[in-house]
Length: 308
Image (tube, rainbow, N blue to C red; front, side):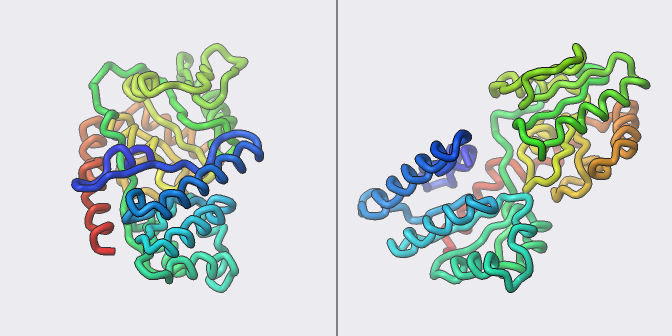
């Protein structure tokens, strides 16, 4: 969302309005109420009223917040884009005749409203449930670059928030097992801020500069998450020339991503051993991420906004 807001299509301006914060239920409620109030003020002001209200939605509470925003925008005569980025939206929707499907379909039937899915795989998966949608990839941050630094040997990296779905504990199991073969192997993780093992570095939160350095120097990025939409971290890794091993159930149209079976320790250990011994050429990874470059993605958004 931040990248799209900071790099709008040519001839367009963008303003980011956050309706969610990390924190207590009360903090989340206040963030929603503040965003709702701000949006209504903008819609009621002819000078501030947007031409397009671009809604990013996940499942659960995220959808119900954005549904209200869509109704406000429709009443004000704005074009609406429902941009679905959840990695479990299809599971949350349930069967095509479910109440959740009907709720999404009712919004998408509003005049000048369309849905956008993260790539062709998600488009194919969601259309039987919600109807027609457009396919537009996430953009890789233009600040993420391949700096061609010397990579550390046998250095695994996991970049993710402190959430069980991100698979930190599983990554530790994988690293512990791999260390029997690679005695100097180490694992760096964000999200966690404590580790009992000196060779597992729990970095907590890192800034953009630290993240770039990790992407520049690690051997393999791990993505053992239970589900993802279209993970930005994979795009950032490829743009930095870093190979990726991920849960095979995650959808992304990058042929050089290496897949291992979800929560299968043997599969991950075998796959990572091959990647550590025979790393993928960095230049091929950088080349493959070209369709996800910000300039290419914003051009697609420009066409969609102007065709609505």
